[in-house]
Image (cartoon, rainbow, N blue to C red):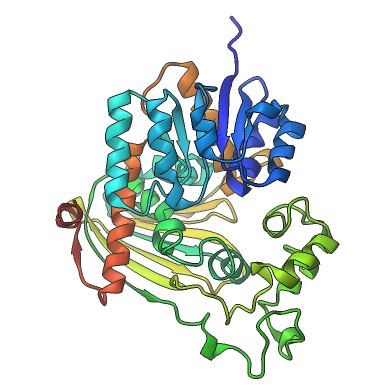
Length: 430
């Protein structure tokens, strides 16, 4: 018997909703059909009509208009800004939609718990986009630890290397530069990592402490003389790695001249060309000097954690790396393992035995996003709904724990590394 594709409405058609999740429908139209969307940008609405055949009457200017219409799809993907998630997620559940919800659920713990309760009340599935759990890299590490391949787990060490240009793009000039407009960095960027550490540990985190600050991207560290915008004749332009022209125009890694017309260039200008990028950089936020923005999120942070059973973990987040990648090291009573996500390789060392190198299959372009996690999550959602399942790998029940960890870490950072008991932290927030 042929199964029909699940129908999807997307609220927020930007780099996540449009580029990452909607594109799954191009490759697997038999599984996913986009039937409605909402985005304030007319070019995004035109793209939905052109690329996915969404009827004009179902291309809305905002989520309120989408939710005012009758229920139009099986699933609503909510990929708006962090502070807007709950205002769309709650009425969508009440209207009968299942949800694919971009992380973080909300910067407010009360709202996270409210959404979890509403999902149970409405008997709806909420999949939170902790896409790393779906990657072959972390799934293999989870499998090895669950099988006690290195004995009893003792420690976990994880790092997220954001890359200097990515951090400048997203967290200095971009949408997530201010915690009051989006979320603290440890929640917005690294609730992924808190989720992975909780998943790999297999038990609850009991307490944690955190240190970090916004140290570098501040006015006093800027060149003197300098300029407010890179293209306004800044004397330091040639030597500055954060120069917007380097990042978006000439860089071999990210620039339009090297053929990179996707992220991050398509955030600066929709369907970017060199001409459109220069126009945006001369007047828009992505052309500002990184030392003269209104950013306030930390640019480096560490978290120390204790889990049940005596497992300890550490996490380091840094803006100051050449490339974007994550690493993980686990030690156990019988051995250790180390993995580099960018290399898609795991080194397994059992004490007194030769090292084993596990080279995971390379990914084709369809599965490139987040190490293959984006599309594998979409595939999992499809099969979950077709098979009548109720519990996703990254359900809201699982996700709330990582949010508590991230929010407690930010509290600790702001209170000079104060140790935070997570159960008490939750009680104090309610």
